[in-house]
Length: 416
Ligand code: NIG
Ligand code: FE
Image (cartoon, rainbow, N blue to C red; front, side):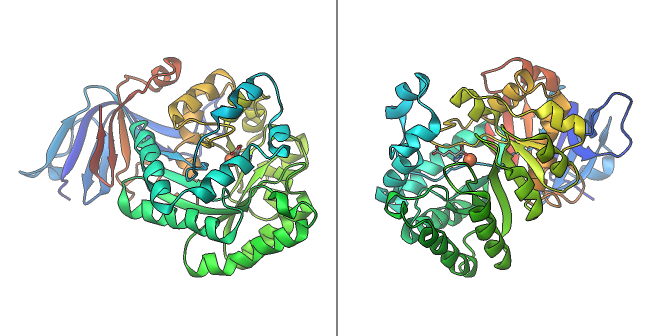
């Protein structure tokens, strides 16, 4: 099979293909393939060849574009599987309070926090939201991110939630990064529903058929947290969403442990996210399930909170993903490479585990592992050439962008 693009002389080709026989001392998240001195052949946006050493001549035709990676690292396009991409405004007005120790949930209670971003998002036009999100995605793409999950949840009313989800749809048509859309109508309780929680919860449930019918979201998510939505309230909404064929994910055990991880497993969620306050029981539940533990250490860093017990989870056999949680409050950064570096320094995750977490495991958390997340024949040619000779260097040298080139569907979409 001829190729139209070949990358050769790859120092470390992280295919992120999983293997089952672990080596002595390796964790269940270090089972990803790394080919030394590899090549990658692409045709029509898909991977048609992958291997070690010289490129077989069968792939090369007169018009094949050949790129010498000069011994650099190549990985699958990174996947940011938890973001609050679409929103109006920013919240630097709360920053001083925040760094002086006013708790996150305290700011929210006073009508700030999420509720302040809700106002800005309600006031923004669709056009403004698209423009802002496009600029964000451009930055993300530059960091090597080719797929982004994007939640609504800064509307909390029908009109604005639908506006956010329409923006997700438009973004998929108007720029290169692939968007996976999530409806998160239960992100906070609007003030006017303070004395009528049930009415708000029912209003979220009532939106489900319309969103499904208009194909505006694939996933449904809830902020299950003390003082936000309880286990019982979250369960009710999640099960309704499931009835309407939404796939599920859940903000679980972020600040207070209320059994969010267990609930995520119980309802068959694709991911349980945050987990900074997960219990041993929650770890056991995740271990015996297909639910991915989606960790967001940038949020711990930014809120000055405990980190999720990643080592304990991985050593217990839990599969972990890593994401930015990009949002205007608890984690205003697009930089997934920084999150990976924090995962190394603070979560004590090992290099292979970290690359697995932002590739194949992130893809699994989105139910997209058949198409993206690893470099294998027949999968999408989404990949990154890093300006580094090995994966350790990318994690060790923190705070800079190591991307050299990014390819989406076999096309060059970013170049340093
Ligand atoms: O994942 N936890 C709830 N939602 C976001 C924060 C949103 C915000 O503060 O605007 C999070 O941390
Ligand atoms: Fe979040």
